[in-house]
Length: 513
Image 1 (tube, rainbow, N blue to C red):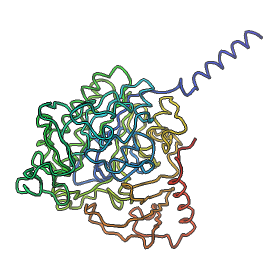
Image 2 (cartoon, rainbow, N blue to C red):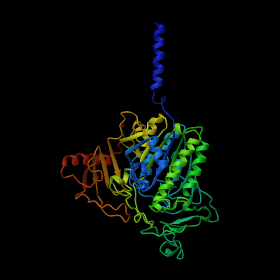
Image 3 (cartoon, helix red, strand yellow):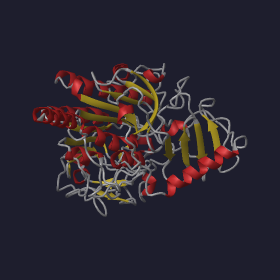
Image 4 (cartoon, rainbow, N blue to C red):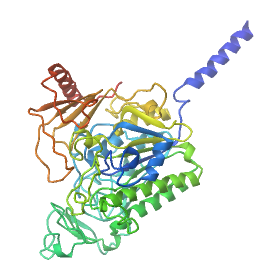
């Protein structure tokens, strides 16, 4: 009897070990590839026919292509904030589009996607566009840039500090501007530094890419930008070389960390303005520079996956491909995006794009691939970039404190395509912080429009009516393009969803505890 009891206890102990979340945790390498301003209809695996994106298509054919994958906001800074913190950006002031001299938005001590993975034993890096501010109360461009990515969980960074239509055009490597000559300090200022300082207004005839609105201050590489700066001549990059520099650095970093679990946030600048692809991609599509930059983005994806294949890491790496917001055509430069659009529909079947809370603003390409672990297919489950923190914590066996990652849902099973797995039951969409929101619950979509003003940016050629009142209701299963407001027909649904929206917006968070 004692032997039987001992054996039973031993078996029970082994079973407990096997099912313990912390001991059953998986630790694949993780690469998040975030495109910039890429729409649902901009890649061929989501229906584009005006160009082909074979590397992104390969991810989709070898992984899971989501038809209801969302970023959390329709502009870059708030989506990046939410991706890294697992919290909707509207909950924190100052998370609108970051200015050139903006301070670090994510403060040290904040639980983040990289800090979760660092705690799990991962090497962590962010390479590409940052646009989440540096320093406090402003960046020290000529000294130590702190706080920054290294203070919120990243071991290494190689960055475009803001976004490339804003100054300065330099790389930040870890805590310093790369290749900066101390005898030629950088000065980033809010006003024209001198009367003879060339700008897009005073020297418009010298530009190699003209502007349509804004983007007419300091000129660099024949393109005028938002903001003013001087100095840092040796540190300045050429726009055409951004993608190559980031792929080279990513390859080097992956090779250096291939023998331990790693997390790479590859934050592409394609296809954000100014759209200046490397010369080898220029003229490769009929869509002009915007299409050429999509081809460059696809090349980047191919280079990253080829590196994994060469190093034998593909079957131990989870890749998440997404975008920071939906598409925009004219976003401040004359680059033929409108004129050469043809029949291409950047938002696919959806309405709107960047800056809006319509589906086209936040429903974007969203693909997960983990060869040998994720069965190839298509998923209709609702998932979002804001969910990566809680999902990755669950996957790697890490606990989240109750007051962290406040809007991140654990949808890891849905991301991995497990049978019967469910994504979100609802999802909140925001713009750049105007107070406009979209709430999707199943097939229903409620929009709250406090501001209906028309932006100077051209998002698409489609013109649909706005709701007559502050709220509009749409049945996405019948009306994916959100053309027909049915709020008057379903007042009870509007009432229930308005109450749910108000509760989410005013709460401290929405993550299930």
